[in-house]
Image (cartoon, rainbow, N blue to C red; front, side):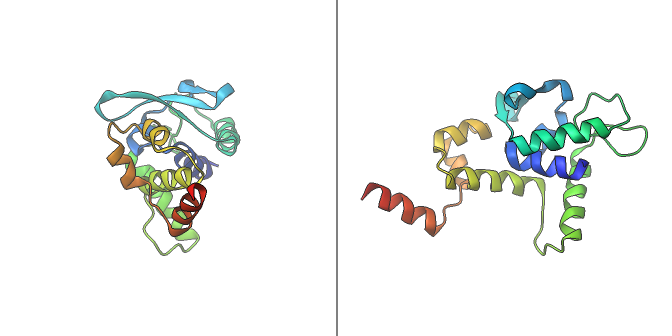
Length: 158
């Protein structure tokens, strides 16, 4: 349950690893599937997560046997907050089990989120805000364009 919740939360929020590590259960606004995160330079922003993430998070939280306020905690006593390295290890375990031959790491999930959102039609300005970038040029690095998207955009204006 924890692995699924971590993976889906990373993919659906586009958060940085350091932001995920600091999330507490009480930070989550379940009614609109959002939360405030504090990013680089102590900049605060709101991020959103999808319904699948909400379901997996609720199941994971309900299964826990601890009172730790952290969203993600270790599976053994004393149930401490999961750090960045632990989350990285969880992703590598998942990738290893499914025999995924590429390196999998939390920042890859952020890139995947950005690419998916751009492919789905999200504006660069909106994506920039969600990712917490001060410059659109930084966001463009994340938003990998593929030929299908380029062709679609071209035909849309022709």
